[in-house]
Image (cartoon, rainbow, N blue to C red; front, side, top):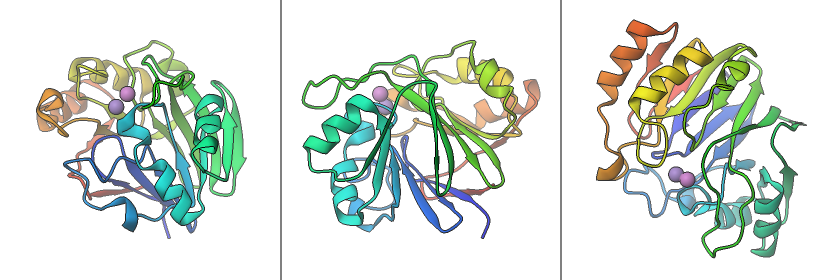
Length: 227
Ligand code: NI
Ligand code: MN
């Protein structure tokens, strides 16, 4: 079975690869655009990019139901452990670990990371995943940064970029990010969930295809990409 990435709305992705289900930033039960509920999602691993509610909201209940291992920064792993999550893989920026589904590197993100109860969530991150078909970069919540060029040098099959603006990059900077990353394909994330981050993704896609090396895949929540 080829690797697939399913957009579960907002910044939530489910990656199915080599028989493993890798859930990224689970925000389902309170998301107006999520196509499924936390009680119905599969997960062997849960990747959490930072401490904000729209990224950690359902992590504890899904980890408890499925027994999934949570991969995140050290501070968030400690916090999740206190909430009853049994298995974590703590990391920090620039570090990578090998897991049964592939390699996970924590990349920088320009954002913040306070947890829902006010605890420090360490530094926010993105993820660079090495999967059987190639490398996938999930920028997660971030502004534009020039070091995306270094991430692009790794050779990316796919980049998942926020376009919502206000809390993350908007369409203009996501276009610049696409140029720095030079991934074969890019897909938009973290938009359309609520009116303050509504965007015209089709207009963004046209600009990216005209001005960068990348092809764009546009999804509706529930839609998937085959790597
Ligand atoms: Ni955030
Ligand atoms: Mn967010």
